[in-house]
Length: 263
Ligand SMILES: [Fe+2]
Image (cartoon, rainbow, N blue to C red):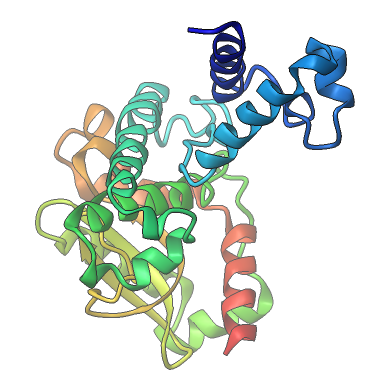
């Protein structure tokens, strides 16, 4: 290995590990690279930069938007740590592995992959769905009792579709409780622009072209046992009922407003 090659490998490794920034790779000119490694090394820095960009298509696991114990006692910290750090990470890894074999799809938005998932290897359905669903799920929740209430327009749409907020929750809980095996319960804005409750198996979601009922998710609850088993054991119904206490209605309202204005 030549000195130049060795330096390039080291810079590439540092960039890959996030230990040097784009500036150090020369994106904003050679100043960062010159300061870091000297002007003579800009070729190696540029190569590292190219390597960094070559891997830009990879999906990454975002940190939880709150501490693992933030949702207690509704969802315990250990469940959150395992669910996010192991299960969600595995979906991210699986999706990236599937993309390794499909350079034509690298850099495509996840939602666009899901919309054409019927024509893709099943790993995209399972792991792509798993990644999207869990990101959506983490960002749907807040500390118990602090989630507020649906916006006026959202509340009116709920009343129109279900009769009341409690009736909507009951329908949602029945969908989640009735989903055989693993899956998700959803509140969506369907293709006709109305609120609707649906459920999907495994890591499917209503964005997929394989979904029986398609639409824009507003809320989704994970009814895989890994989401609740440590605390609730086999009592899925208790988990579904308790979950409403951590729903962030401001986030759900924003999603509803965006979906409604997109019609
Ligand atoms: Fe999950």
